[in-house]
Image 1: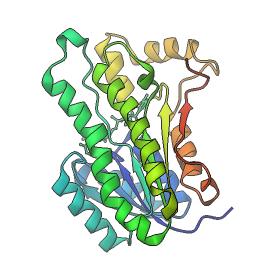
Image 2 (image 1 turned 60 degrees about the vertical axis):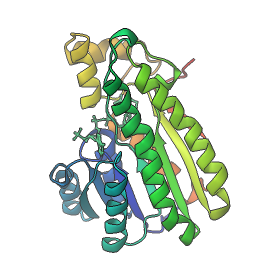
Image 3 (image 1 turned 135 degrees about the vertical axis):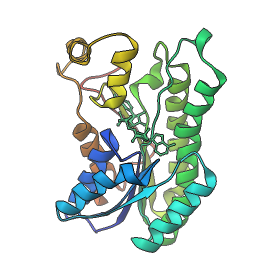
Image 4 (image 1 turned 45 degrees about the horizontal axis):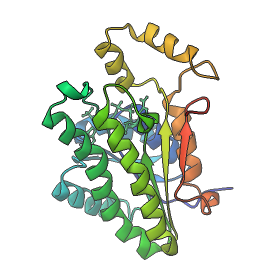
Length: 252
Ligand code: NAP
C-alpha cells in the first residue's frame, strides 16, 4: 500500500537505529525531522536523506529538556508541517551494578528515555489529534525483562511499555496509535560501548551474542527500522498498545 506522505520526527537519529529509521521513513515518502542533541550531529543523516532524493531537516534538542522539546516541535511544525509520526528513539546507557550506580546514572537514563518520550509525545500529540491521525513508536528493549548492570535502563525500558499502552488507550479515539519496539542485540555504538565495558573486542562480543540467538546473527539497525516502518504505516491502524520484541527469536 502506498503511504500518504506525512511529517515524521525521529529522536536520537544522528546514528544507529535512529539514523536507519529516519532514512527508512524518508524512503517511504515522509518528510523527516532528524532530532539529536546537537544539530551538527543530525546533519549527516539529514544530508544522506536529501542526497537520496528525500526531504529532511536537522534539529538540535535535548529530549529531556521541556523548553527545548517545545521549541523543536514548534520549529518542525513550521518548517515541515504538523508532525503525524513520532519515533522516541533517543537513548543513553549508564551501566553499573546496583551498588555502584550513582544518582546521576539513574537520573540521566530516566531523563532521556522516560521523561524524553513523555515530553516529545505530549508536544507531538497536539498536532496528531488535530489531524485525526498519528503514529507513536517508543523504543523499549529486551533489557525491560531484566539485565545485569542495567537497573536504570531496564526500569526505563519497562516503564516505556506501560507508557505506550496508556498512550494507546488515551489517543486511540483520535486516530493515533502507540506501540513499542523492543530490540534485542543490535550492532550500534551502544552495543560497542557495552563490549568495551565488559572488556571484549566488539567482533568477539557480537559472535558470542549471535550464538545465543535462534536466527544465529545479531540485529542490524535496518531490522528495527523495518518494524517501525510497518507500525507507522497506513495499514497498521488496528495495531496499538503492543510491544514487539525484535530479537531474532522469542525471549522469556
Ligand atoms: P546510539 O547509537 O547510542 O544512538 C543514540 C542516539 O541518541 C545518539 O545519537 C545520541 O546522541 C542520542 N541522544 C542521547 N541522548 C539524547 C538526548 N537527551 N536528546 C536527543 N538525543 C539524544 O543508540 P542505538 O543503539 O541506535 O539505540 C537507539 C534506541 O534503541 C535507544 O533508545 C536504545 O536504548 C534502544 N535499544 C538499542 C539496542 C541495541 O542493541 N543497540 C537494543 C535495545 C534497545 P549523542 O551521540 O550526542 O549521545
